[in-house]
Image (cartoon, rainbow, N blue to C red; front, top):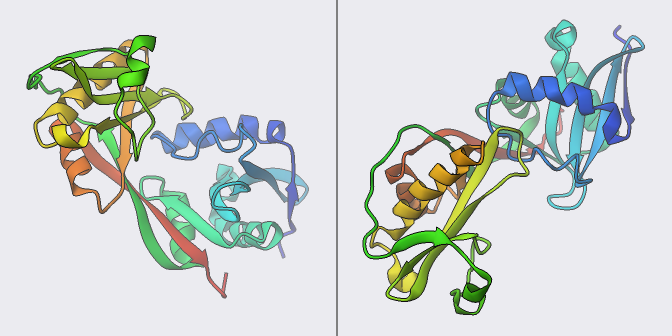
Length: 251
């Protein structure tokens, strides 16, 4: 019988192995910064006394959710028992997986119940040439702060569209994801919606994202049809889904 051990460790002990995980995933990893920021607990998986993989369980937001699992190639045929031992030791209550990271998705379907979709994930697919409806795209300045409209879903971005003397949309890209990805976000002032400002803003934020040496990516809630249309009009296409399920009794 295989001797499997799982230990809670410090982040530095799994950091090098995470680079293999990132390379094999070859996509934006939505929770990439959780371990390095201390928002997840790292676990080392040991087989027959040798390092074989690692896992990560969130500890501040969505506490108890297992969000990363990776095994070295020589033990991958035994991934399921390794994963189950990780679940048992970490006492994880949920499992999260991106559909574009196959090995984690397999573990989700093998060990979880009540699986639901939390986000649609997007990758940059084509270049657009949209025109700004009536305004100018520019970097925000400190003087703009007092005139920015209230944001309800996304942070205030460092780039704005100004129309008729007012900021009608803001956006930017977040860089705490696995290189080279930058996560594009935006919000449009409600009276200015459905006029093309959002898609134009995303197009231009994609451009400055590339100029900064980052590869644009994005996400949206599955129920937010307007955001999905905006992203796709600006050249993004769905590349996966973020799924979450409860750890099943047989896991």
